[in-house]
Length: 465
Ligand code: ZN
Image (cartoon, rainbow, N blue to C red; front, side):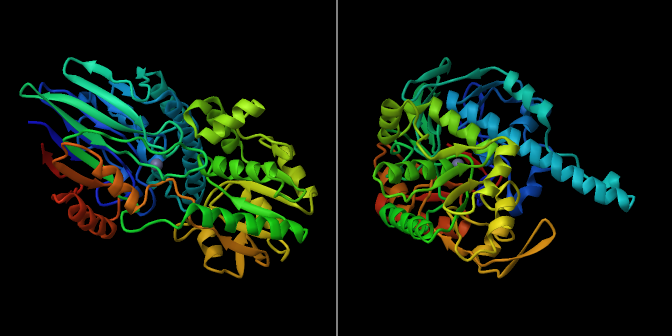
């Protein structure tokens, strides 16, 4: 009998890692993500299974909470095959490298502090370093194409379908034999929101016996995309017309490309006042190149831009400033600049320099386009902090602070329910990747609509199929 055990993203939204063991002994791991935020201490200690016995690692997409423990998996003995779309592999390289850099810097700072107290031996080494990453990319990778079944071994086939969440993202249908009868289980990974400017709509899943579905926003429906876009445009236009500058802290993957696409559309429609736009993030610049390279996987709008301009995101007035010198030169532009920079929650990165130079000016505006976790500088500003500390300096916040909610890469409650209700032969549904209070709400809606039991998976719980 096949079993599934969730070693992450059970009752929480990070650390995705699910072990499927099927008849005949194949062991398949679906995602191997990092725990983040309050759960991050769960990254410590060995895996609760033997990584050396895993035959396949199926990766749904490149977000850190789905790929961040892959180097650790290798360090603990994994030598199997990794399956991911090619775009996911390219993005994972960027995301994992960035995370290795942040962990190394954190380690160095903590080490120095501990050294002063003679306690350096207590400082934990980073989860992995750049060398460990190289080893991960030297393993055997297989690159399934969307909607093209890939046979891994006799009686075991996987089909990746576009999840519309970020570039390369997939939900995975795994077909295997159970006492000679074919069974299909689907892992949703993270599924996307319809009407996204950059990603195509989530593909349909037509048939499966078992579903493991994410429930990040299972308790609510998003604000309409139209409302979000018009609010974003209004703030940009008003600020620029008043000779101010707009600062946008943005996540390097997906949100940045969405913002670029939106600004390009404004430029095309002549809605954008005369201005200079800077993408001031080396990581976001690399991610944007990868998106551009795989434009055939993006929305029709992005494909049209590529066809027309030879590039999806670039347009007149946009400057990429990955080099430090070019980045510093942005300080010389004193009016009508739009600056997009990381990090998305303002916990580091170049956005801090721009804040230091521009937060004091009441003509300027800051637009938050993503969720700000409690404890981050971004959250302090969203919550109305009058003074913020940047590089040990207290800065007075006089710029206007805006939060434009509604850009979301995740399906909301009605999208999850609609997607799940199209699946034929479904007799078991399991909720993962969500906070428990939200899962309870989604469970009751799904049980009502689909008229069947839905189970919320607990960490380490063994499910017998
Ligand atoms: Zn994701």
